[in-house]
Image 1 (cartoon, rainbow over the protein chains, first blue to last red):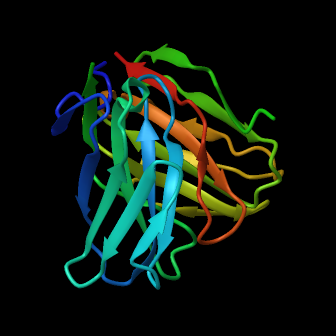
Image 2 (spheres, chains in turn yellow, blue):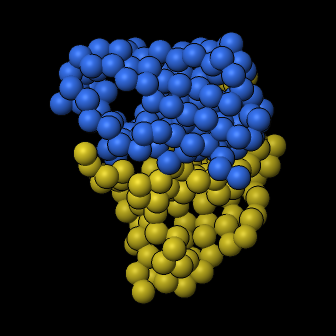
Length: 113
Length: 112
């Protein structure tokens, strides 16, 4: 079968640059959001999360921004490295949803030396 | 710490055959989930469980069944396999609501 992400939008960046991956979520009642990284042949790997009572959260080299007014989520990766090349998914959990994730379509990040 | 383990990693089935995809986790998580991922798409929820003995349908449950007899195991059963079930299947678990889900590495299933 086809590999994951074959038809996904691609963000190409140079090694060392900052990357910004955007996501529009669908449910205004969602109160928890997660970014996942998926490498070829692997399952999604947790990167960072944010709750709806926050608008920014920082991790190691990553920052997530949440704009509830326009239902927009972004993931910023500082000093992008070749190992960051993967497909990135945002996911939302509507309140009262038993932790059921609703995934966005994904963005492929390609890091060039 | 193995996390979430899925077997088999790959399988080819003929139309009409049945099989069980295995999933086990060693993190003592109550919540477990089955997703499918079609090419170029995000994951869609098939079934989920909030504890042993409790299961419920997700977004795309038709053609699948699950059981949850123990906290650790959450097998997914395909009855009468159809080409539309060709996909990559992921199992995940989480400790409670509003906590990240941890994923296995998937089972790649082709039905011919």
